[in-house]
Image 1: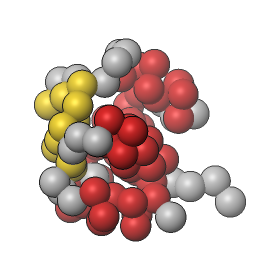
Image 2 (image 1 turned 90 degrees about the horizontal axis):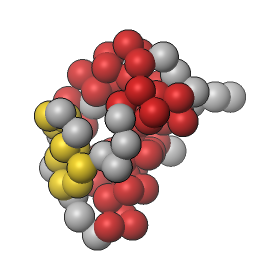
Image 3 (image 1 turned 90 degrees about the vertical axis):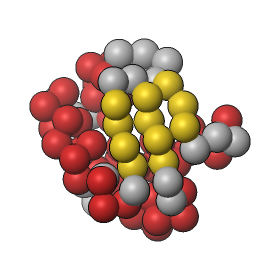
Image 4 (image 1 turned 135 degrees about the horizontal axis):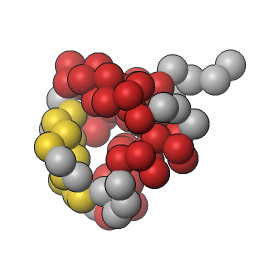
Length: 77
């Protein structure tokens, strides 16, 4: 089964946070590139960002701020 878009975005963000050992980071590419890499349309990615707010993820421009990596990792499983 293919994970829902917010889970795909959450998994990507949690992985990036773990790699950089930081809960706040800038996307290294445009959001439309991220959407393509996740296999979703850019507008679906935008809605996924909103759906991640309850998991304490804030997206502001290219900056991703994760307040609860554990909750995000749990969503991605």
